[in-house]
Image (cartoon, rainbow, N blue to C red; front, top):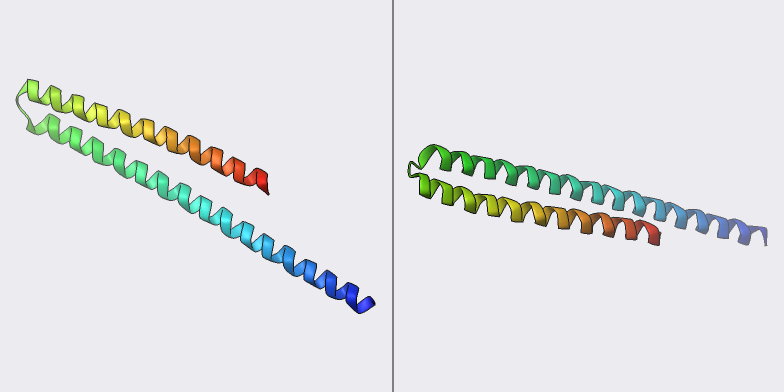
Length: 101
């Protein structure tokens, strides 16, 4: 009977160890995803700044320049809204996932 208890304890320890390793891997994955999303956002932001600068420096017609800047502002607004929604969904999903455990 003593051997059975030790065997069960050993099995329990193995199970807990697996859960801990799984949790650590999940947390690493979430951090990687957050970092990747931030890098993508920064890259998109730099691209938009570059496009706006190019428009300002290369287009001489004020009407076309204003129209192009308006379109770029609309794109920038849409991207910002999408980022906010993604961030809110990501936070909500992460929070719900951590509550389940």
